[in-house]
Length: 149
Ligand code: DQA
Image (cartoon, rainbow, N blue to C red; front, top):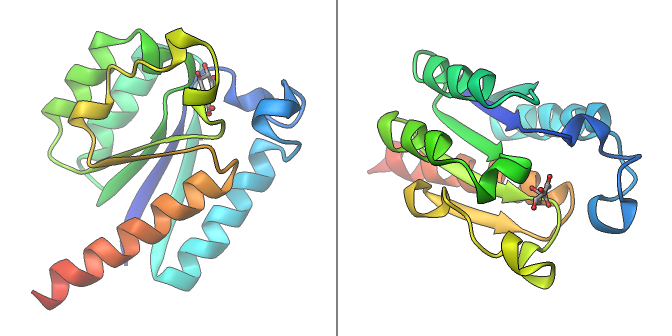
């Protein structure tokens, strides 16, 4: 079974309590639980991890190359600032889908710029926890199409 890393960046451990008007009221544990269940239905084994630290996220992405078929990544605030995370995504040999809970384009100008989008396979924003769900379904279909090619 193919494995997918769902990687959450800074402050996403606070989802559910943090600014619910943008991020919803579901906890990260509940989001992860739903993604694991959805993964099982799609034939994908989902592993979830969260860190507030840029270096730990970089290590997780580098390590994912050894075991994951793809990464669903919400880099939180680092989306808008981190050259280092962009370089890591560009360096690793597995596809990364960028996701955001909120519609970053309906918010402050500084959130409109992502340093990582150009090196990601694609990007999904604004659907709350379902942004991750859409990304997971996109990976499932992508791998199916690769296998039937
Ligand atoms: C976020 C959007 C970012 O701008 C913000 O810094 C976050 C969460 C989202 O999921 O909507 O921490 O990535």
